[in-house]
Image 1: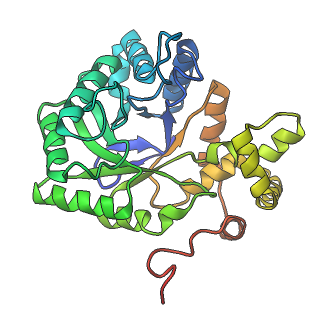
Image 2: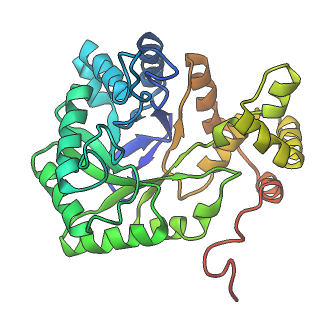
Length: 329
């Protein structure tokens, strides 16, 4: 396993992070335990979840939101030595209950959500506490005050963001600097070969402030995972994914042909492309099986030549560079 610093911090995390979004919704506890065991065995020390992961609460279901955290907590409780072997990340923002203050980033909700996550995770601290989305209705002074309090109490160590615009990142950092805080350590963004808007302003902002980028959906919800080959083998795509396949079929054909030429699976090429970007700290892998986890880790050994990277740019063009040069002289 390869490790790097989380942004400008001294914390070292694995280049592949274990994403636990499927725990409790698509994967039961026993299978989730096996995946976490395998992740630890391969050297993955970065585990990412969110309070909302696990699926919606339904009348006929015992479990729902919060289940992913509960599964991780139960796994940690099996062997307490595991806690000091991982960097544990979770998120706050999404509604967990139906009350008017059971969501977003008020100091009131941040405090209560953190306490609830700690109970579900069966731990006394969260290593990276991430804002799942920006809340422009709450002043940054209030948000940072809430995080400062949690840091003082030892309940969280680092703060991260997710789905922020470049100017949100800049605003957050400037207010944090006024309070003599480290500010954001990382940003989770939608970033893959098919979704490259972050290259305009988010990545330049992260580089300027020394904030690590953690891409989510690295294989485009399955689009970059060899979807044409899977269809040819008789597998069916969901209606939403099928529409994307038809809209991007020429690109997908060129992409999968290039991967065949490289003798690499499309999913590994997609992961390796992200890992080649110096802005990227760690790529989130959300495997449904141990086999998928082991396969994704192989991306660390995939070398992409300058020629291959150029071909990928031709197939999946970005926004034309960074703002404003991408659209202005």
